[in-house]
Image (tube, rainbow, N blue to C red):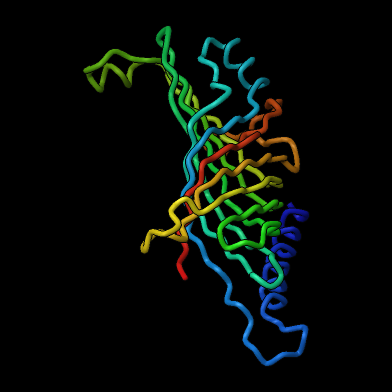
Amino acid sequence: MQIAKRATVLSGLLFLASSLWAQQDSTGEKEPPAAPKIYLQAQSGVQLPFFSNLNEILEWRGYNRIPAAMFSRGAGAYVIFPKSRLVAMADYHIYGGTRSETERETAYHGSVAGLSLGYNLVNHVYAQLIPFIGLQHSWFDSRLSRMDPDEQPLPVYLEGTGNQYHIKTKGWMTNIGVQASFQPFRGKKVISQTQLGLKVGYYAPFEDPSWKTNGISLNSGPRVNTQGISTSIILAIPLN
C-alpha cells in the first residue's frame, strides 16, 4: 500500500511538472505558447478479466461461472499539451451482469478509476496516437444466491437458511495501453473537432487480491485479475 501511495504522489507530480513544462518557451521568444487542448471522453467496449481460479471454486460449489468477456462502459477526460506532446488522462469505467441457471444466480460487478500519463506520437490536428501508462484502483464484488420462488411471504423467506453470499476485493493496478483516434466529422461546424477511435489497455495488479465479505477477511482466496484487458471505442469532444 505504501508503494501505491508513493506512486500516486509521483503521478501527481508528473502531471504538474508536465503542465508547467508544456507552457514554458525554451526558445526565449515572447510569443504565448499553444494552449492545452481539453477533451471529454465517453467509451464503450469489451472487458476481459481473468477469473479462471475463481470460476473453478464457483463451479465446484454449484454456482455459475463469471463470463470471460463482458460489456463495459465509462467516461473520462484528457489534456494534450501541444508543445511537449504530453497527455494527462483520467478515466473511470464499469462492467457487470448476472448469470442464472439451475436455481442458482451469480451477480458480478467491477469498476476501475485512475490517472495516466501519455505521449501524443502523431502531432497532427486531425489525428492522435497516444501510448500511456497509469495508476488505477480497481473494485470487484460478486453476490452468489439461491433463486427463491417469486411472491414468497417475507416471514417464510426469513425462516429459511441464508441463501446469499457476498465476496469482494479491491486493489491498485498499473495500466499500459494505447489510444488512437481521428476526426471523422471534418467540415461540420459544431462537431468538426470530435475524435473517434479505439483504446486498448492491459491492467496488472500490484499484489494478490485480498478477499472480504461484510468487512470480514477471507483466507485462501483465488488469484485473479479483475480488469485484465480492456478494448473500447471512444468518442472525445473538445472543450476548447
